[in-house]
Structure formats: structure tokens, C-alpha cells
Length: 365
Image (cartoon, rainbow, N blue to C red):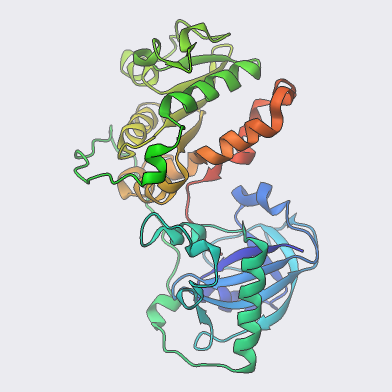
């Protein structure tokens, strides 16, 4: 049995209850993760507006797609049949911060609010020990409820919806924030060049052509010259205007199949995140119909920063919205997956990268 996060606002929770409390759903883009949930698993419900755990659902089916109306503001069509087995009301629900000394989510934080990254989207797999502790806390609260006031306006709030206005080429002021890099990151061996080389080598092993940013062609990692990577393109297809081509040429890594760019990667090591986002947003502004999978690859401790910056209105109001088409890949996930695949990587299809990437959209069900 596994434990999964299931996000609700107060409004969507009340709609869930009104419609029988026997079907929970997630956004369509979460379907790949939802397929990992199986009957018998627990969905731990979390009220986003008031940041409290309030219920546990037991999964009774595999996921399925259904568009029958349940929620007013969104469909959440990837659904499960569920039983509501434990429930607290909003006043007796457990504030997440009351469990901070018990949950691994709060350990080794790189910033005060880094734990919030776990609650940006669902479903999200809990560590088994965390799931057990949350469920036990809910059961204990049912036996000995403690009432705590909460903000009704936050409970009933609707999920944020960004306008879909087309904007011009994006410009953002220089980031003057002082970047304080934790000591563990300063001393680790992972570098921007290493991740760039791994992505180039991976694309080549998948049978694709690859491109490295024009100003990085002379770089190397551990004596492995980027310029010597198999299938490295010397020129890009010229189907775009000059301004678009200049933007594309500076993207850290591209994967190509024929003349089609199938994936673009920006590696953000210790920068302020803006440089890669600006290139991607300029590309979207200039070519809104361009179908390219975009990925931001960064150290694990930068996850919260990535999500904060990419969901700024500057990027979220693009059409299409940058958070909806750009995904996040943490260094450790990329490296561990490559270690597990070993020589088998040449038998994979490029689409596998989607399974290890995390959407940058925030959502609530």
C-alpha cells in the first residue's frame, strides 16, 4: 500500500462530499502519475487554503477517464473510485506545521518555505513513514478532536486562473537577489557542464541529433569535449526567422529528429533562474504554435525557486502559459535514472523523459 497526496480547496472538498464522496479526480496532465496508484492505496487529503490534513480516502479502482461534472471550476477527469474512511471537519483538521517534527518533508530544508513545494500538485507520493504518521495523526484527531479557528475566505477560495493574454517578447528586470548556495551544493561534484554533457550524451544515445548552445561548444566535462559528441549538429534547421534562430541557438541543449526540435533543455545551476526562462518565454512569444517539449533542469534544492519564478504572471500569462509546457527535472532524478538504465538507454524512446519530469503548473483538486 502506498500513500498519495490529494489536494482540495474547501470548495472542491464540499463538492466532492455533495456528489457522494466516492470519486476523486486529478487533472489530465497527471495521468502518468495516476497510473501508479492502485486499489488499496490511500489518498491523504489536504486543504490548500488553510494548509490542513482533513481526510483519508481508500482507492477502490484503477484510474479511468470520466468527464461527468462533479466540480464547478475544473473537470479533474483522471478519476478513481474511493471510500472515505477517515474525515475531520475544517476546525478539527490537522495543520501541516503541527507535524513538522514528524515528517521528512520538513527535514534538511534549504529555505523556510521549501516544504511547500511538495504541496504544489497532486497526486504526489509520500514516503511510507510520512503517510503512516499522517494517517495516525488523523485517527488520533478523530478520537480526541481539537478545534482550531480558520479563515473562511481561504477555505472557500477558488483555484487561481491566469488570463490567457498574448504578450510580447518578455523582459524581466535584473535579479538582484543574493543567491546563497548551501554548502552541500558548493562542494558536490555536479556542475552545469556535467548535466549539459549528460543531456547531450543521452539524446545521442537515443538516436537523436543534438545541439549545444552556440557559446558552449568548446566546453567539456571530465575531458569529454562537447564538440566530439556523436550526432552533434553543427547547424540548426533554418525554418525560423533570424530573431527566433538567435534565441534557439543559445538554449543549453536541444534534441532533434530530422529538422524537428523535439525537446529543449535549460540547465540552471546556481543562477537566478531567469536566463533560461527568458529564452523559453521569448521563444514562445515569437513562435506560439511551436510544438517543443521544454525542460528546466536544476539542483533539487532549487525546486521551490523554479516553481516560484515560472509561475510569475510574466510567464504564466504567455499563450500558451509557460508553466503548462515547461517541466522541471531535478539533478538527482536525471542522474539516478541514467544510472539505472545503463546501456539499456539505447532501446528507449525519447518520450521516456516525460516520465521523470515534473509539471511546473500548480493545481488543486
